Length: 357
Image (cartoon, rainbow, N blue to C red):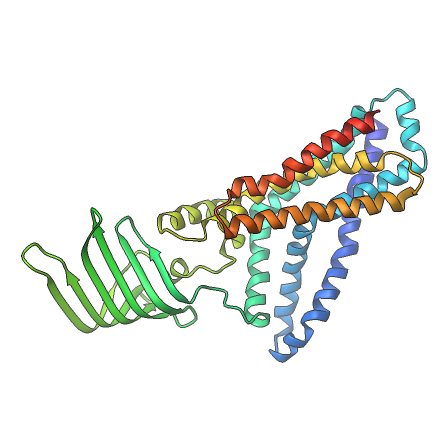
């Protein structure tokens, strides 16, 4: 690498990380001002709050990653353009593609960092962030608690009218077993409780019916213990469960939930695919930012930053809208997560051609 490559690469990375260090404290201050009342009301211990904001830092940085990256590149590239440094570089015989090389190297570093964050560090931060939010701040249920219906194997289906995850107890339990689409047995109970000690379930008000060719076999008991092949976490996974898992855990979780007939598969797939689309967006946003800010404009850096902010928020808007669309409908999660990159990738090609001229 030449001196000019190191010069641009250092500015690229330094500006990006300084932008993170500038905006994350602002995000923390805003979050504290919004939530301090509920924290005091719920008497949240200080150590819990400190851990929450450590997780919040990672979560917030990942959430606004495209904006931070875009603005940092526009900021320092506009300064290069205003100081006529870019004109001097291109006038020396260096092509625009060659000028882009340190930017692509920087985008590669940021992309690998984002990939590692999404695979290993973000899940732990997401768990801490969401656990705190749903435990101390939100009045919403973190888990499905009513009308829980699950397929636990190829032939077995369970239903619970309500389930309290904290007490590991549910009511109006039904277990139906089918063979060749025909009911072969049914177990009902007024309540079901999970026993942590031996991982069994205690059924109260137990009744069973086994369908036979010569007649049905009925059985009942005040209480009866069973060992089922599901856990309370499988029965009612948290709404943010997918965000808290590493790549391997998430793929296994999706396979299990698909076999159980979960209706939230699309939401889990959106989380999975975003682990790959966010790193790719680093290259696309880098090219767009350089193409937009490499020309010296009459409005100066202010105009470039205004354009950059609009484009960055548009990217985040696209990402959120199509992600929510996939989660709440039958729209393809794979297509939904890649549409922002595809749309902005086309924009990057068009802007890059104009910048070369």
